[in-house]
Amino acid sequence: MGLFVLLMGVQGAGKGEQARHITRQYGIPQLSTGDLFRAMKTRDDDFARRIQQIMAEGKLIDDDTTCEVVRERLEMPDALQGVIFDGFPRTPAQAQWLEQYLAGRKETLAAVILLKLDLFTAFKRAFGRVTAKNGQTFNLYSNADGVDFRFEPHPEGAYPPRLSATHRETGEILNRRPDDANADSIIRRIDTYVRETEPLIAYFENRNLLHVIDASQSIPDVSRQIDEILRHSQTA
Image 1 (cartoon, rainbow, N blue to C red):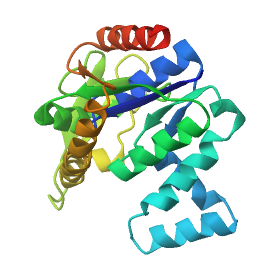
Image 2: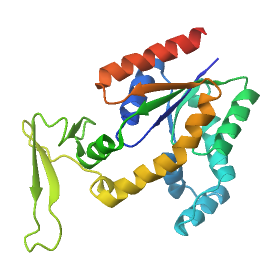
Image 3: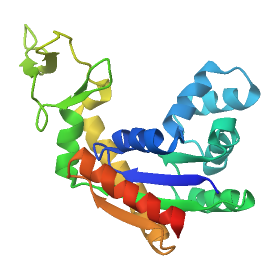
Image 4: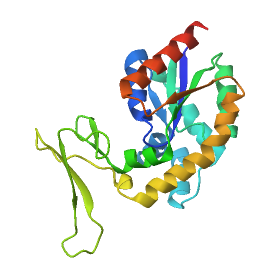
């Protein structure tokens, strides 16, 4: 049996960090639909062009197409023994498809892990985060040690001040994702998460697959709880 795990959580809940931990511990890749859709821009086949057209028109990618993209990824050699789902499924219809697909491979979801975080903290984690080239992350509001954060006003006051951050020891200018700098974009992402996730929480709760972890804890504490859940799922 493989290890198929679904990570759920609002932006800033630490899904990326915990997905990296699971990959290191269990050797399974992360499956992100966002990454898969972006990768379609580099392909030149009929299926990819159809998705490119949908995205170019600003339309939502329908469930059937999304599931077909996921199917492609799940049938790659490195995904045969399991994956970490991130951003999929987003709807009960996608969840039903996933369960049926895995059943056809004589597999099941080992666990659905909800990293629960209050929405104000989620906003601060997104708005204040910056990343070094080596992948290390810092945050203006919660993890600023060794980093000089400053808000730099536009010389003519034409735009709101921008947040910049420099690593004190190395002098590296740290990267901030463009969508994290836009408060409206963060709020819209949180709204989308709330709207789409609540039905899935109930869906997986009814199947006794849901495990809830307080994501406001330290990263190692969250990782330890995830390991405990996954160990139990493999021996159940």
